Length: 229
Image (tube, rainbow, N blue to C red; front, side, top):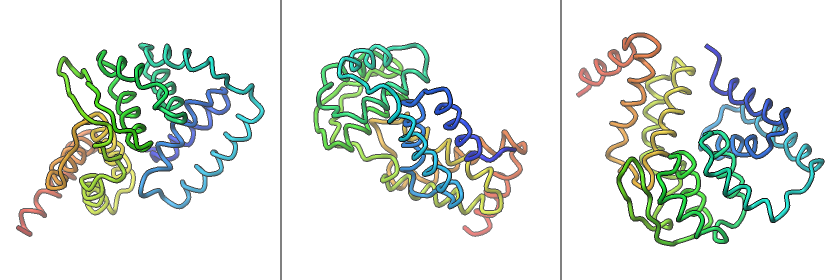
């Protein structure tokens, strides 16, 4: 199976080639902020970042009026377009769009785009109260209370567990790690506690194992844990 990083690098390159610069920027930012990246993949990602910067410098500058367009794209029923718009907004001062963000979050938004905006506000030091409507439930939260995914203790511990379990199978680890990141993102504004790291790591590992080898790997992991306990 093609390595996760080969796939994401190809996806970023295609976005650049297709002049979908905001989508490419979102994908690059998502990967480069991760706490661990294989050395070879990191070099390729940085090279793509340079290619993207060069391509964007030749493109027509984005006008301030395009903020309205980005807000409209955020409401799109096409996930890739909504994610691209959320990424583009996160590269600006989100404080200028708090009213629009509040309206978007309260309107049952795309979970991944909502998570990107919530994390973006936390990273920009914005501490305002919001209401998120997700799957028919309302969550009241303060953006300043959110910890970016890569800095969450639960992520660091769960990632270390996955790395140990799949030490001899990097492809499985990459897939499980992607599932872990996605799980923590869509869980926002709630966050896993550090003592829940094992459970969420096991959930991701089980999904990968059942998909790839009928569950034999996760069965071996569980058996080893029982022997050690």
